[in-house]
Amino acid sequence: MVQSTPIDSKIVGEQIALSNLPDLGYASIREIVRLVNKIEQLTGEKFIRMEMGVPGLEPPEIGIEAEIAALHKGVASKYPNIEGVPELKRETMRFAKLFLNIDVNEEACIPCVGSMQGAMAAFMVANRSDRNKLGTLFIDPGFPVQKQQCRVLGHDFESFDVYDYRGEKLRPKLESYLSTGKISTLLYSNPNNPSWICFTEDELRTIGTLADKYDVIVIEDLAYFGMDFRKDYSQPGQEPYQPTVANYCSHWLLLISSSKAFSFAGERVGTLIISDKLFNRVYPDLKRYYTSDEFGYSMIYGALYALSSGVCHSAQYGLAAMMKAANDGQFNFVEMVKEYGRRAHELKKIFIENGFNIVYDTDIDQPVADGFYFTLSYPGLTGSALLEHLLYYGVSAISLIITGSTRIEGLRACVSQIHPTLYPVLESRLRQFHKDFSI
Ligand SMILES: Cc1ncc(COP(=O)(O)O)c(C=O)c1O
Image (cartoon, rainbow, N blue to C red; front, side):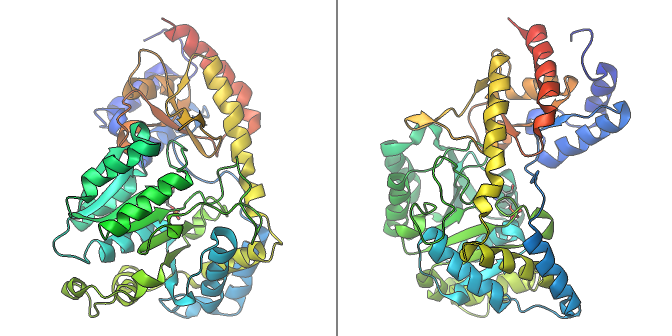
């Protein structure tokens, strides 16, 4: 270890040892958060915190005001219906039409406690729809907690890193898993957390066509809705629309998070949108767990009832108001979060100037977009080693290993908390890092 680092190396070393994390490359996001909090507390130094995907922007006033109004009307004392308040169901249905160009029924637009709970409920129903199937195929890299959800449910899963299987290579790779007949659900995020790659319409068509062929339910995680800023998805009812697999298959379930697109993570509210075919489909094997064999009924009165019996009443009104304003063309939610793209652009530049590389660097034939996350490597260091060394320089991230990436040299960096005023601090820390670690 070099002699003098921006953060007291004795304290960093001690805290890493005390953290009981044998290899930081395998630590979860929250474990890294805890470790960095402790180091910050002991040293009094602020880190460049890029480990956790929390919104770095203020929540929209529209949402806050609507929540307050709902609370003043007394909703806090009332249990919300599990299927959701009519205002949110209606606005979600409109949102689907206006921003995805898909038709759905209001009854199949169901609030959830963040899309985290939406995914849990989706696994609880979709992975139990056929007793002969085993579980989920994750198109990785991905959001690690969803695999944790499968683990705690006792569901099997498989995964592969999509980086080497883009474009025409996707079909044979996917088919090799789906043709076993053992896959119940297929899950990916688009734009992708952590790599920020975005599937093309052709790739979504491939996913959809194969899902239909092998009777697989697609769970499309749209946590970063509209945030591929290379295209303008912000205008309701106008092309281009946020790409979705819903255009290409029958049995799909979309997870719409309010956390990033609406900067509403603290309210833990999102929505599930289920295709009409899937909502109404009868799966006799569901009767093993639920009173009904219908997918939609089991979702609402089986899974979501058991999980939380509905979603925070006032938060539903907050999200409904923001969606309504977006649907009515009065609130450009995409414009608000474009700041993340600008930050990514500048931050990537700073890392690259100091010897770093972007790991997932291309989207088939073009550079990957600037968005909420980007991926990093440094010559000669594994992701674990890089993560650990960077802590001494006051920069925190997570390893790509925990995202299912096969690129062991990489880290995921989240741009959200890095306000432009912090760029000079990052620059100076990375300059020293580069000097100390140049080969
Ligand atoms: C891909 C992905 N899915 C789901 C979530 C969770 O979203 P929510 O806050 O709506 O539960 C996240 C949050 O970081 C995410 O990155």
